[in-house]
Image (cartoon, rainbow, N blue to C red):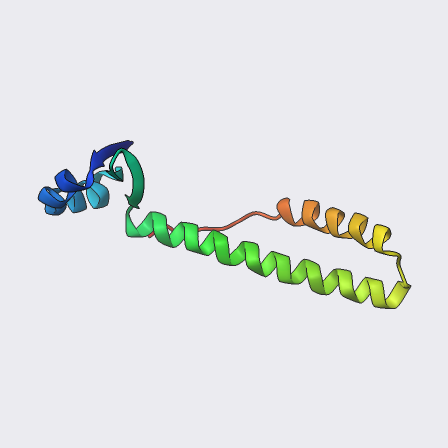
Length: 102
């Protein structure tokens, strides 16, 4: 569940919001002047997001290395390399992302 509240109210209820985020898994969107400025999420959600982010960057690096090796070995044209990179990206998306939320 996601709740939205003004920053002033969030500041007044900070302790109870921490409990709500931690124990109930509620996400809190904090607004100032009616515009979202921050989000409170649980540490577990943050760690899972960060792990997925790291895995995505690892995949990008892997794809780049594979593409460069093929480019150098086979003398591909730039258009052929773009096709190859697109294929490698699609293949990497098929790999499962494992997240430990403990």
